[in-house]
Amino acid sequence: MGDSLLRRFWNAIKPPPPAPLCAWDVEAPSLWSRFWESLKPPPPLDAVPPEVQRRRRWIGTCAALALAIAALVVGVGSYIRSAPQRAETTLQTGIRLAAAGDASLAADGFTRPIRIWTRSADAYHQRGLARQTLLDPEAALQDFDQALRLNPRLAAPYVARGAIFRGRVDAQRALAEFSAAVAIQPGLTLITNEVRSTNRWAGMNLQFGTTAPPSPCVPPRPTSIVRAPPPKSIRAIGIRQPAIANTPTGLRVRLRT
Image (cartoon, one colour):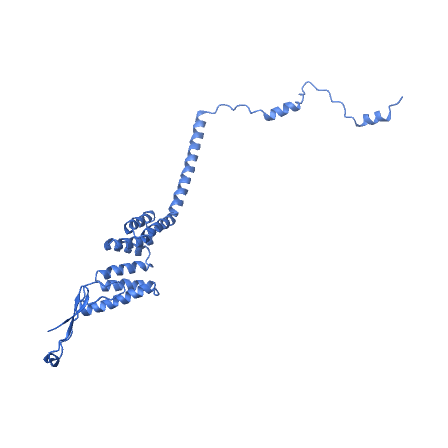
């Protein structure tokens, strides 16, 4: 009796039986064995020779040292490049001290930005003003000179130097300083007033021979003015003529007998 339709269909689709293993064939590992082989750690390496170990340590040390030097160079470069900003921040502290009226602390405060950045012309100028307030004109002149060497286009140091020279009764040098400031900033009203005041004072100095320095923007008062003698006709009739003399409190009128 023949096979049924279902058996014949199964015989057609069922897999063939496994081929018999030969003596030289190796049985395939199981799924669990393959999974364990993929997870277990590798076997230890053979011992590395001492010479190779020393060479590897030397290469690692050199690489770490090179990285440390590179990081140090980058950090120092960034710190040096930030010197102008750090000096400007410290300069503002000195300006606040000067505005508070403490010239001594302000001078010390302006020294700190100079130490941070030696090319800060504004710091030298501000310290010169503080030293000028402390009645140290020589040190102030040195700071103003250094500020102008660093930045010749600053007008304020010229004005400050002109004020010092005018205080020393040196009208020619004062006018030279004020003129240099006007050449840099022609529209600055303060410099123009200083030049006009010094010009008026210089003219009075030549005319009357004054030795007292003028106050800022105010021409000095002559030390003495001698009037021409009155005509003989006036002296003949006995009219007393007033004469002007300079006193510490101002001009006083006295009468000649």
